[in-house]
Image (cartoon, rainbow, N blue to C red; front, side, top):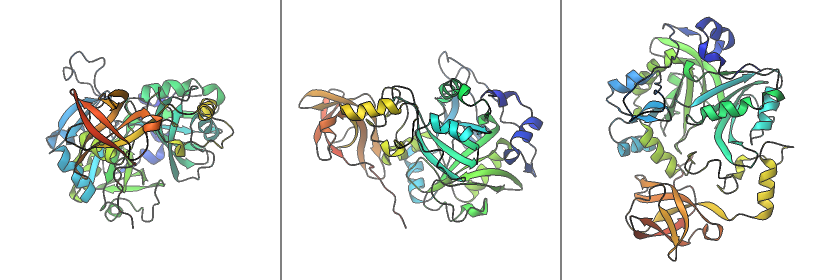
Length: 410
């Protein structure tokens, strides 16, 4: 199997031969999304930081840049709350080019990923996507991912930026099961922009003809931005709890597309707003709400696990956990008094520790303080009362159903 790292050193001609849908750009010169480095931003960084192809656009907009998962990324442009409200009321754009994008082609590619992911990849129709997990043999969540079926044996896997090296290494361990599958890491050769909010679907056709695109569908289509155009993928997916789309286009088209969406009225939004929005929608963050010490059962995410499949990595461990029962569950809560429930704060019941906060903060949409955390299974019931230890103060808290926020439909 060709290495997952192989595309990083490819020149444009080779990449174009492998990925014609992502390298044909008219009206603009092509520049590969090369890896750039910075030093001195963090105290003694383990490795230099990468920059996306939109880095200069962020700088021009006055974004506050921070290290994130090995990348230099915008945390905010104006204010986190203003940006979050823009997405809930109108439209916002996020640079998510730091997220891993891995492409798999060749005979057996679908069956191979079906074995490694919890989703029913084999039953996924072309032009459709599914959210799910890569599990280890113990059922721990190595990463949560979205897989897009582009063709019969042509798939795109999007993983978290921080986990991309681990995902690459993990998949490489199982290449012996798929000797005819070819794979490429196209992360740095492409841009990925999330366009989210209630007004997005009414505007997106100006840049890509995707009318009627269903939720978790993906279209291979021409994306037009400014005087340039290029072939790309547009999917009706996102991580904000709002409707919208995500673009994957050649890196050279990314900055022009970003400016075009801003011209449509989209507010540039940083990682801070994205975290607020995903928390309101109770979307898990790997490394906080889920990781290799947690399972989909404990996290209440079994709807993204196809237990009816013949087999997948981690299935046996989940079956054993189902049979033995759960000691803890991920629960949502709201504070009944003011306080910020930050990750790591202890969760208390009658003065004893019963868990810890994994995600928490102020919800501008709901105007309340909310959070998620693992608690003893018997306490993970809506209406149960616990407390959050915030700097030695036990703040009264109520377990509530998830998600905290759901967008209006129709």
